[in-house]
Length: 357
Image 1 (cartoon, helix red, strand yellow):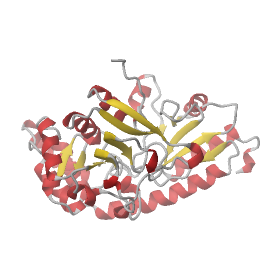
Image 2: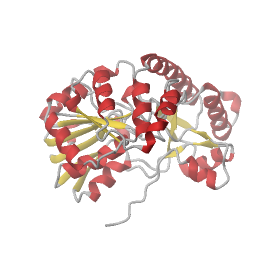
Image 3: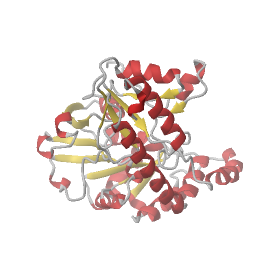
Image 4: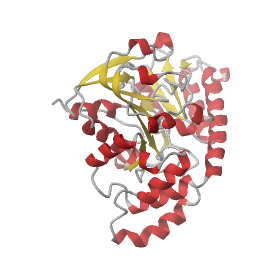
């Protein structure tokens, strides 16, 4: 098998090894407010437990997640981030052919390749604002898509769509960024997943609760699907510290409300500022990041990324996403000070006269 070569956002450790230590990271779409206040004390309290094995199936976390999402605990599986679940799904449900809607998170493709499945790629089109035409989906054993999609930030499905009728044995909906959307319960397929033998929803606590270093995610699906995933999951997948942090985080509902309000305001600021820069096209989207197309022919995504990195600003070059090219970058929504620094730098690089801002 050909070696899978793909970059991810948020690789500040590699930059630190190269000597760049002061970085404003817009490449990873993580809550800029950090983790909820209760997380630190919860981790400190759990430190005494690291000499023991963690709860084998993270049952206290599963029960907390089930209560939060208002589903039965038997419909929930906790994991070491949604990334573990992507690989579990492709192994647990042996599929001859998988359809992947692209551009998309690269690990769908990698996990599918490792499972030995053949892949149908369905390309979202710029001419359609990267929206999904369900009639273009070819039949397969499994469908993978992000909702909201990464990197386009738009919702590909909503609950008005009768996805049960789509020609797939399993439909895997990655809702990694759903928690950032106001009224997200209207768009999430969690309730449908617990009743359906077809739908599997993947979620993560990495993004909204800024727990990227601890790796916590979960799946919601029918009891049979959860049981099958459990058969392929190694024991002790979620560490004691990760379980403690996650339980503390999801109890802080005020943090969620404040985060959504704060990020909504900052995203509005960014989108309006970007729209005043002639060398950029701002694509519509609902998630906590923005897809930008570079219109200025003097720059590619790679060259603009290098220029920004010289100022200590890291953005995601999207040239390695299927369906995008060297004219796209993705930027996360950050704090006002960070957002202003990014807008200033982009304006100075792309505007002939920065007073255009």
